[in-house]
Image (cartoon, rainbow, N blue to C red; front, top):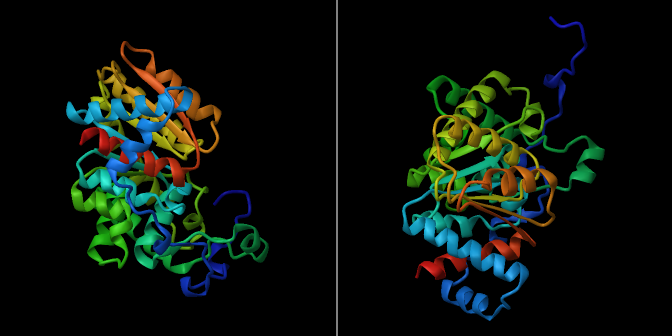
Length: 314
């Protein structure tokens, strides 16, 4: 027993998902843009600045796919909330994505979309009421599956994706985790304890979460062993995924991976320090490697990017 007093999480007042207003519905999600339309739009752009960068990113992503190199997509929670999952799912269905990685917030939104068809709440109002993140169904499901994952030797992403499929979640076709499991694509979830709402669910087992997310770290490091000529996107994660990526890439390099020809892309609404240095700059010093920054709203730029790459491949 430690010397300091702890909060008693068993006394928390939990809510049913049915009683929580949400801001995002699966009915509002994007429909993947027609590749030919995206290609025509991109051709019309000037050969300057961000438009040139977008063309180069599209070309290098298509080239990686043609030569059988990995294409890794790392996402933060906002990317799921603004409804662009169908665009990345289209990449999965076309065999373009070889690994999906996300932080804990993205996984929560992805699971809620799959199971309930809606997610995201008014944080300011619910914080004042003491009800932010107190949805019983989300915490119970994700923490129970995390315990199963730890016992079965699974990573968090694999376990949550498989469970969404096994239970027949009604909106699982819009879930990155479920679709990755269905397609046999590694999906990893990288958790920092205390950062996610399911961590104050009374049933949360920090040991199980830690063991399963550490396994996912090793899975990501194994994917990055093939970093030569690969493309890695960081979309909407300002801190956690850039830090995880840097460490996983270090493991891969230590075990003999080549970073030659590696392409890294940070796509976000605002460019932050960690994505710039950990994703764009530090990993791309080897011959032929390049790092790019694309700035724009996820809900507009991601559909254009995804369709642009498919148009280039067509």
